[in-house]
Length: 177
Image (cartoon, rainbow, N blue to C red; front, top):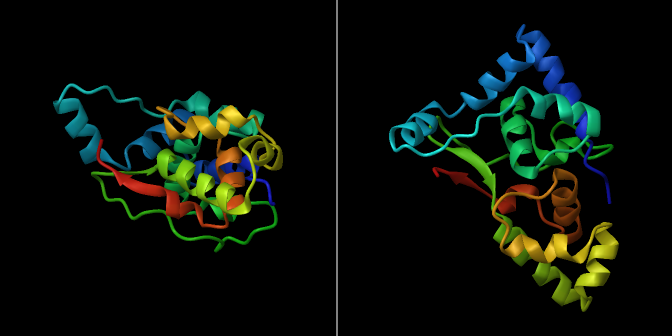
């Protein structure tokens, strides 16, 4: 199983940021503004928007991991797949993210990720504890995907897709929320 390289994702973000002569706050705005119609619709309905924080970008460089949902913002801006950041992968690895216009964002479907994981687990005849051991995490991190409100780490999400044997894009959708 190849590990997701969050530091390589950070380096790619930094390279694009510098090429476009953006500060980290400017990069955060550029990433957020990829869905201006979605942002405006949410604002008009009085719904909370949670723009990308520059510290979220910088923290990726420090820790090498981010939430799987934040990673999709970054990958969309870079026009890259999650698989292209697996150790040893090429730039063209993996299926493309869901195509999203200015009124949508790609999002992980965590319930679908849980269902795919559970199906693979059952077909292999292993317990949640054995699955968690294989994925180097706690069982609750896996079973909790079924009801997760937010996200899991990108590193764990990519371990799961590899363990299941399916592209990450199989567990994503175009959000209009």
